[in-house]
Image (tube, rainbow, N blue to C red; front, side, top):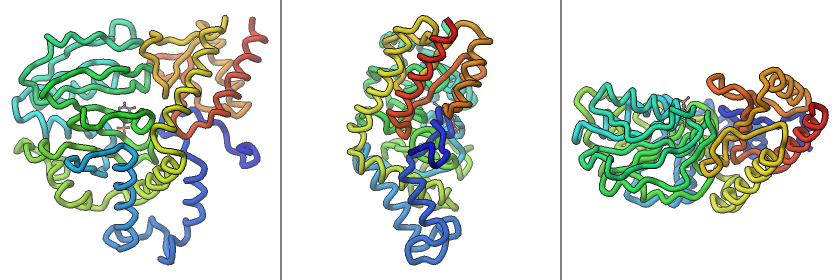
Length: 364
Ligand SMILES: *Cc1c(COP(=O)(O)O)cnc(C)c1O
């Protein structure tokens, strides 16, 4: 069915595959949304039609993630990378310090950017083993007076994820959830702030979502640019300036699809099944090997290698010719990486594993 539409199995780490139902709906509404006579792209963000779209996107996200009323949901731009600065500018002024766990390049960038605005403490790092595990955290090392404690819940490049959140007590836990938001159930009340670029697991590039506990708003440093102040966006319902209107609309369609499917608990079950299919094969294969310490394996990004660079390249090329695309690992790691976000069908993973078995048989 997928191939009759000439659609491939897209294992891209981001921007990544979107649910076909959402794309189909968008294509039907492309030239005229409802009775508006125009595309969502052509609409004023202050119009009634658009206000309904952004309102629905927010209420669906609140419903799907069980976001309590004392949290604001902000729809911003600038990517997760802008949050590396926006978080310290808004939160770090309280005590001038924040704690970081370095589990990959993104976590490191968050720490390096924060260092421009205060003291950034490294609590633990897995850099010694190319970030192939989540380090044990010694709570006695946590700064009691940190303004926040920053983690990356899922490490997109290396394929690790936290299976247990650090207990930071009264220090707000801040999470970069770009590559696993909405993939598994999280208790939002455990976090002071969650941010995510939309283009991995919730929509197109251009939208960055921030979920922030209200008491953390209003402490921005004086040097904070207006556009980087959470207060400005919270006070203006993410409409201080033009929001990324079309990205928010597509995200709304993705959230509708997810709700229809049974919400986050339902997709979590599917995601765990998909990941198990791939990991079980990797654990039994004589050719392919997973690169991550087992207990810390991501259910979103699955890196693997053959141990032979030429064979890796041949595999990636042959896979692409069969419709399994974007399997090349991140340039810093090499090998392969299958990103199997919410929109990747179980069928795609099953067929990928069938292909890997054939490839293994031919390359003994
Ligand atoms: C992709 C990614 C980023 C960078 O996102 P941009 O939106 O491109 O700035 C940051 N953190 C994580 C965990 C990511 O996966």
